[in-house]
Length: 296
Image (cartoon, rainbow, N blue to C red; front, side, top):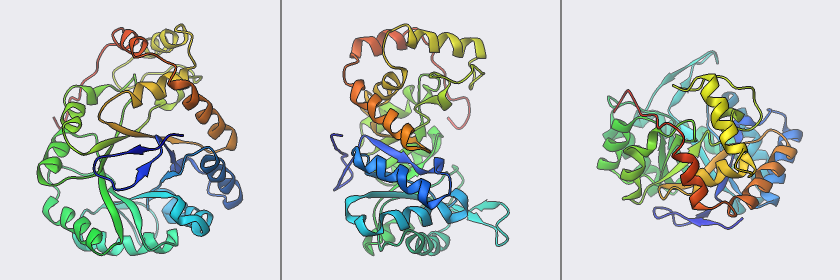
């Protein structure tokens, strides 16, 4: 896989990241998935301290500890687990972030995180101290870059006005084109780039039974899936091309829980460059554009 250099990063990333939330929580099985991803050039791993109550980070740390320098490692912070492990509270405070990173570093068996992301956020959050925490961690060498995960246009505008996050993670697919209205154009003009989650739309445009999604009915989802299938291209390849063609997008975070799924993702990636811009535009024009209705 040809690596990508994002404007705000001093290291390259693969155009596909392995979304580790999909891992099963079994060291042997998950190691096979991660090994398969790395073998095809997917060396960008995305996790979060919340996933499996920290076990996800622990498994990744164990798998990559002897090849840490060959991996781009991203994790997230902001959801503070209750002491009893049942539930969590949103906490974007500086003191919590500075404490939480130490636990993530320990679980990941590393002394630095390549990309540390705030796992959410609201317009009311104490952004001054949140962003200060990330800058402190950068100055300490504990993180190389920071980003946020948000689908809220008002939050994204605020953060971009106050700082220069390397990345913003958000949902995007033919079934969720809300970022196209204002968020993508804003980000494309900055040095920040989007990490897309949900590129495969839960499999609804590939092989899952049609069901409603956002403001699309099950019948409309079925029509969009058939529109893509009738184009004669592999649906997964179309969806990868659909995401990566956007100037604001840096990488697609795609989950896999088996070696076979990794192989399918890689095969689709190898096919995606053969899909023309014209085909993407033609099909996009036939899909009703949805818009953000809240947090605008």
